[in-house]
Image (cartoon, rainbow, N blue to C red; front, side, top):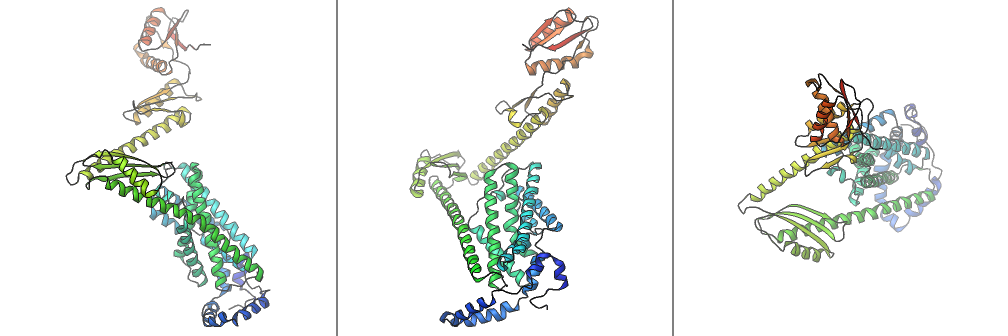
Length: 534
């Protein structure tokens, strides 16, 4: 094994930070020796001397510190492989989050290489290697930006942009999340120090980092700043916890440091302060979650007590941000209880100690066994049908906005009459018949809905005249003219032979259109145009 002041040729070739991290003499050895001597001869020092001796002899001295630092430092830079694997991991993670599939999210963790640079940050802090710290921090920053950007790109092109349960669970960090990061870092640091690192340790650390990063990308893509801020807070919490825990583990195992005694104390105090600063808001967040969970239990118990034993709560929603607290529930019951709202409100206010606004929708079901289940199944089917209708409306709105060249907010949806309306902007090269074809295509895709696309005032078709009348071959032109006049509501002027013009004017007026007859038209066709008031 190489001496403490040299490295092997392979280690030099691994990376520049590895060279700096290895083989440097400790400039504060005498100072540390004096402190150790004074501690050893104190009463407490003598009492724990056997434990310290065992730790020094059997644990710390058995570790090849140079090999550990060389391995971590050589894998800290942002190599092309690191960037590629981070990108792929982020892509799988955001798809798993959108699908609300924990299995897919876990699969993404198998690819994530975030363990190496974040442990590099922790060990660089412990050893005082500033250059190694900069390289590791830069690598982690690049990986974070790549993960967020790629996740946001996938969300932008994805038809699924709803906040799933998997996404929502990563927007409210609490003290338990800090503990997950803490245990992950302890496992990762121990495995690296003892030479037992493996994929599963990387999964543990990536679990605390990659899903929050993917959710940050989701919040950025959807401009949902609540999701963005919550996930970013969780990521920063986990990152700091993992890095600082790795620092503590490295110092506990006696990794050499170029820090002076004074700098070491400042570092220890700083780590303690950061942990406290993270723990306080996370503890308050957990306390709020516990309060809300307890409040939900109180509300559920109060509602259950207000109805017969065979009644069932179909849904329960609580708005904790409103004042008073809003509680909305749906109950399937064999008999109505007229005073349910009042009794539940009184009980909830008594136990919560704050005002509440309770609204309970009661649905009567039979008293026979399974009646409540059947009613709940019917409600579930109705809810699914409603969700399908909403998806149909969303698709129709998107298509109408696209073909009309406008935003989705410009599409008018009349749910009661099942009608959708939009006014199209002029599109280069698109004729009146093209607008009608677009309307017909969308109408065919949404059964049961009336789709009305109001075209711009582009050129109207002229109507041919043969033997003093409009021939049957002009049926398409007539229908197009009628459609355009009906959709726009704009007066149409006609100029041509007197008898055909009069017949066409009567036909249009009978369909509610306004017609203006112009003199001196051609004899072989009816010239049609829009009459726009100046």
